[in-house]
Length: 220
Image 1 (cartoon, helix red, strand yellow):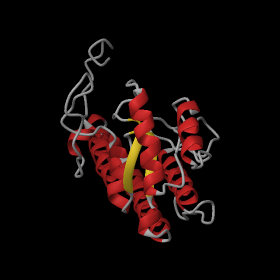
Image 2 (cartoon, one colour):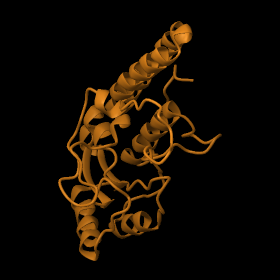
Image 3 (cartoon, helix red, strand yellow):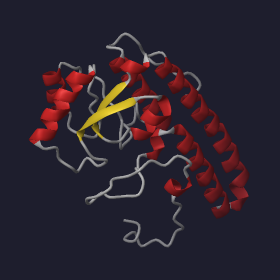
Image 4 (cartoon, helix red, strand yellow):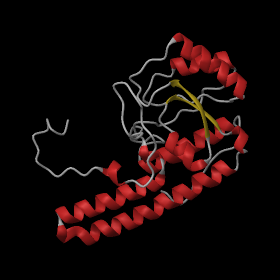
């Protein structure tokens, strides 16, 4: 896409600058060295903000101080988000923090906040893959065996298969996550900060069978 844009603008690879990198797909069309969903760890988002501020300052030196000031303000909100999510997850016993999502997009989030990834409806880091009948059957049995209380559909993927699997396994499927995209304007996931806060709230509700919520101040 970049090569076809006709632009000679500088390319800033934010993923190369992040401090936390997890393994990617080992084979297939989506094979990659690292899992591309790095933004689900706010520490990586912090590194990205620093890189963006630096690149903008180099592109427009007269506004560099403004970029640094805005970045500093946003970094404070990212740190508040990180602390808030950690507090919310700590309110749920570790044995209940079992995650099943539409696809393997939340490894960074899970690693950061002590969540066990049990499985995914699409056992891949891309939503373009398709699960086999055996994959689905195995996941239903795994959910039952692990006592998973919720399967989390994603906003950018049809929820039908996740809902079917949840129903067969006796789990809920009412809590939706933002995986690969933000939500539309006015939604709970319209910005990065809102998206991750909404994901944390959905997970806490799902893990606790609706008995807990997650509210994070200081990120508005």
